[in-house]
Length: 236
Image (tube, rainbow, N blue to C red):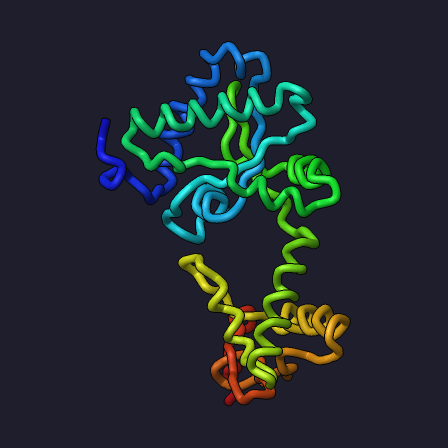
């Protein structure tokens, strides 16, 4: 067996495809999982960015979760068998043992009804990988708990700094290869939600500025960020 510290621990689209094809064959031949084919998973994080959004070239793992109610009293048996097969794939392909894992299931315990997230993610109809044995969907794009995380982090940072912060700070929480500009409407919505909690806006507002170099929005901090949806003015 290969040394674990020498195993592959970053995965691009091709590496995931190889691993998932092998995992699918294992599911087909599993007496525990075969009756439930296709096994349906909801995925999130870097896997979605790499396989579907294509805004990054690789990531460290496939984060997924099963719907417990789908399998009823057999859920733990199904989960253990799936993780066993994931580990088998890792040994054969020399992948890290957690190349696919369900550690995100911990966060499901924070939801009132985790099945709602599963159902609405499926209803979104964004299959990332599918065959007769395995189907993986992207997690629902907009989910209230995402905003709760943003509000909690923004509140913590504002309380620590004691003053309004630069909106560019938000870009530090984007770990993709392509960092898009922070849009004013995003900051405005975050401000609104934080204001409901602490009565203050953690970030400044913005105004639009049109110059020969294009359309910019000017933050009250003095920062100016270009917006690429409008062409530069030709008459200046």
